[in-house]
Length: 72
Image (cartoon, rainbow, N blue to C red):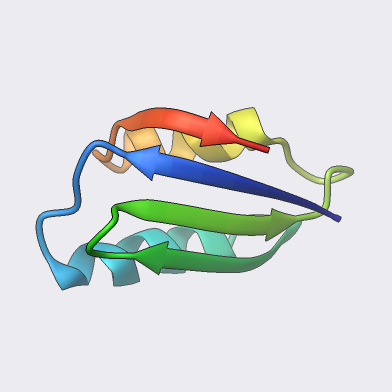
């Protein structure tokens, strides 16, 4: 099990949280997703045998939320 934290450029509304969490939690290998609105941070616990931090970052970016920093 691995954990990655992403700092997003910005979250404009609380419904962004629901969108990000819903999409990420449907990904194979993702165990838990937590999004903090005011700090624009995403924390994801995932199984490295099914996905990678890079794949998760691409998904977030594709949803329209640019990642400006990632920490393992």
